[in-house]
Length: 387
Image (tube, rainbow, N blue to C red; front, side, top):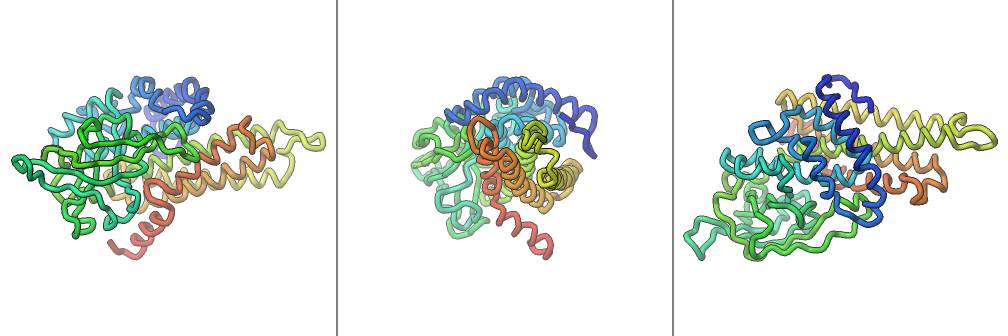
């Protein structure tokens, strides 16, 4: 795979190449079966952990491999080319560990993150609710001071929905209202071990795509956590979540790039081999223009993603650029996979080819980690100079 892009280094390429080889050898052969049987992508955690992938978002003192955000993104692209469900599982793990890294103190980071970096523990991120996705004022999960003990703790009650990794995670970072009337300023974040009394986790949702990236409904019924499990001050949870999502939107962009690259490669190969009237499809101008438009949009998404990544790596604000990268890449992946299926004709609509799976896998990218509409609002606020 060619990782030669502006802003990348030889070390970035070497790391991504190693991950790409693993993806081709271990992930790609199982991707179709994982989709058909809804096998959990967590089966790949040991191999991914051996390459350092499960801790790529963490610094070396916390067990991470010490790679750049660029190497991490290139690795996610390589994984997504082979299996988007596996990339989704990793992204959910990064959401949970990023929340502790960003919102936690040194003691919390040391307690929870090294074993996540090693792959021993899996993390989850519990923000979305059945009636509240992108709007914090709609959040109904509450965290009340524990009145039955010494008061040095919280009781969490509520329901979270579409929580990836929940059933197999060692812990979830749960966002709950410590002040029900304060909107975003009333949201706090808590590290919640999965095995605490009062937690019920549903069967996996029956998803349209990324079927190996299992998502669950999580019910919290009087779940008690100590105050030491709160990340940051009361009311700081929403700010933590937004910083985490800035990072994760680049992870989603990486998934979109990988899925689109797989679809474009399949379409180009099919066009070169498929004969119509004794000539390859690739000789037809209509097909050539389709391939050109697919490549053009793919490269534009790469450029936006690398620009946002450069800002992140330089420690500069990148909220608006992350939103642009996620928006463009996710919509690009929808276009490219659909056009690739069209080039395959009726064969693309069958499960004998990977295109119908890529189309289904790409669809969620316009929804999670903030829908396309949310990304447009973020971008517009930046244009208007508003907060």
